[in-house]
Image (cartoon, rainbow, N blue to C red; front, side, top):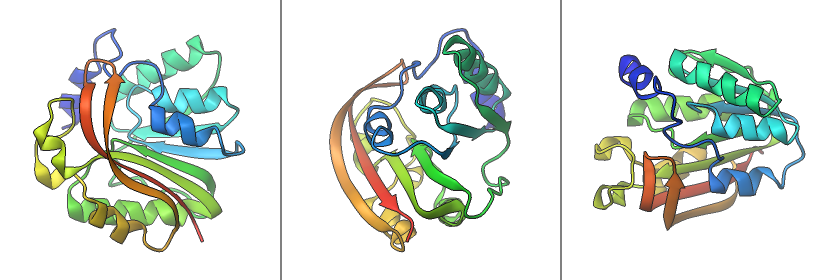
Length: 198
């Protein structure tokens, strides 16, 4: 899998574009900047955007090619980010440390997802925000991107169970029009979530 993503990110072109995810952009603008964690942020479009808003930004992904492009994008935007190359399953974030976490199209098998989401909740400060957009199981009907394996797609029930202990501010399944580089383009079925740590 690491080799697949390294190859995907190895070209000069940013495969998901350089603009931030629209849902992330909308929600992060309402939060006072502090420390933010962006697991699985690939080529850095969201972490770099957060840094331009004044966030102390930390990204984690297991592709060295992605890190190289994320750091180049940060230099172009005249900001700095911290980017760790690590498998998300092995990543252990500091507890009660982040003011926000953004999970934008990060897909894992069920058993890995549940464990990872619990780690992320524990790493948020009280009142910290978690912003999530992921492909919903109905995404298999569309050709706009995302995993083609239903086990890697999420349902409202999956995510409600994972984040039930949070104060849920927004939670919906929506059909949206994606325009994020070559890999996310067209109508898509997504889950959007915004919650605060209690």
